[in-house]
Image (cartoon, rainbow, N blue to C red; front, side, top):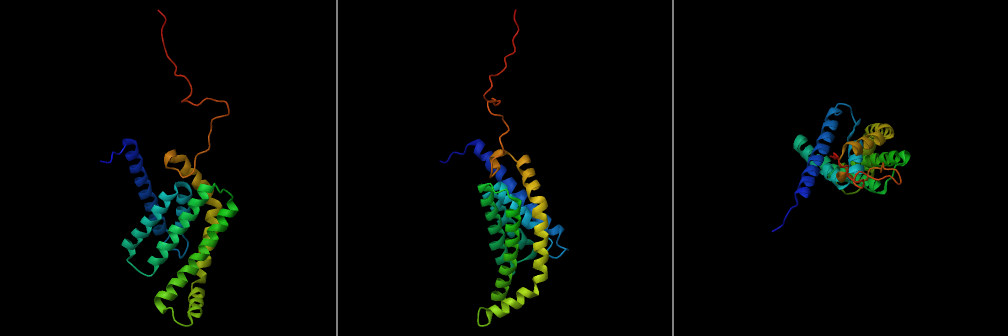
Length: 209
């Protein structure tokens, strides 16, 4: 019989709740901006969740992709989503583990990944809808150029959002999230030589008779 510690069970339930909330906010953010072509918040949210929550953030990206199928039905974009979004989240989870904080590096990485989104999307569309026979790259170029305006808009959007919002948003997540759920540790606030609350002897109130 497998015994589950109450503390472990509580932590697991909290992790599941955070994964659900992360996936829900991504879906809500995507829906809120759906009327504006390729202006999106999904990249920023999933990157931040991966950076702060690690594999829990990656799991949230899979949940988000599954919810999108329930909302919009299956299509060629499903392959793109299940490859790209978990890959983006995992990449930023690695950044979180390595404690990468340079804003330029983070923003450039987001822009490169956004560029790859357009390339991968065009590759999948070319292969699924026109086949992998001759003149593949010519057909790929036509499909890619046709959507270039959308991809450029998305790159500019993410360049702005990652530059301005990634650092404060991840800082907010670290502030409001229980330490045990974080992929990266909070900065220690205790000064050198200062005893923490656990190390200080308890105060005993007594009355001399």
